[in-house]
Length: 217
Image (cartoon, rainbow, N blue to C red; front, side, top):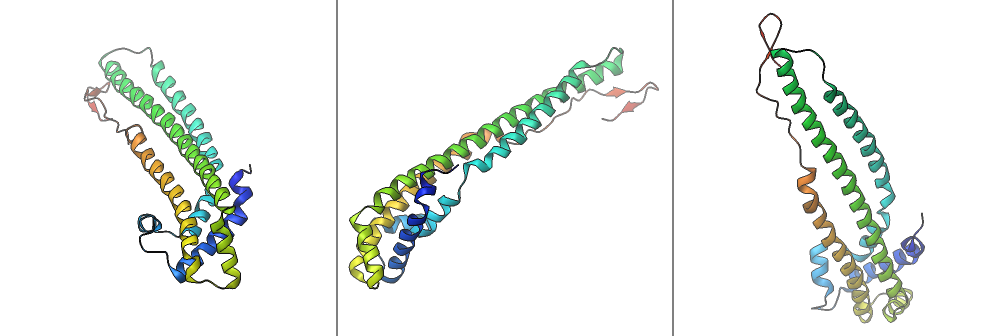
């Protein structure tokens, strides 16, 4: 589905590309706020715009579908383990303990699947929010006096007088991307515990066969 950034993509790429050309040829004024952004992100405004345009939240829909199928499979396994059997004796008790431990582990895996789906949804939301934020920034700079200066200079040849205008546009774009980057860094930290590997620890109870021999599970 097309959004605001899709509608602004062509002029956004064109303007940010011209900004990159100016910065490469004339640099930016000393002390301008674009410098720390360039050092931090290590990307020019045009490349940053292109990267965000290529981000698509819809690509995570398949991940949600796969996790849903996997959750149902785990639930079926858990239900099978819960059924147990009618046989009795020491071996039955030992098997029951192992079965209960495995069922508990499968329940934990189901929780991991739910967390994975939720994490995918959170990343999709971040992508959508980032695209909206950049669309707003691009919409503002496209109608700015700085944009007029950059476009006019592109026709006449890049020179130092237009560098402040290009630096200002670049700084606004990169500031938006930097804010999105900050939000992205929080996501893995927020979900780390719920997405960590869940190890299965079998019960230590031995299982004995009909002949009295120990069965290793």
